[in-house]
Amino acid sequence: VFRVLVRLKIFQLFGAAGVAVVVNTLLSGAPVEPMQVGVLSALVVGCGVASLSLWYFSRRYLGEVSLPAAHPGHACFSVLDFWGHREDNLVRFEDIEPTMSALSPAAAADAAAQPLIPVRVKSQDRQ
Image (spheres, rainbow, N blue to C red):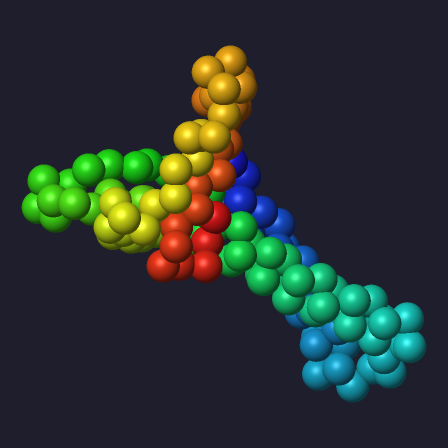
């Protein structure tokens, strides 16, 4: 999941590079057609939406959960930021809501077999 999100930025970059075609047309003094302006506008809006989506979702997929020895009583949630860099977030145990406490053993086993499990943290806006 991480690699897909990070690699989508490459496609976004190619889309933004399409702006260079219209800018080159403007700089050469040639007339710009309304269709080019429309396509350029859609391209810029699409790149903006892609940026926001990548930023939002890349911070919600955990790469690792650890119990750091340097911070007893805390869990460390590691995520990738927009640029693909690791970001460690320390969370107190008290702020982590139990995910499977209300489930039956069979339902908990089914939920644990899923590739992504939502974890709610009281002190943060992320899931």
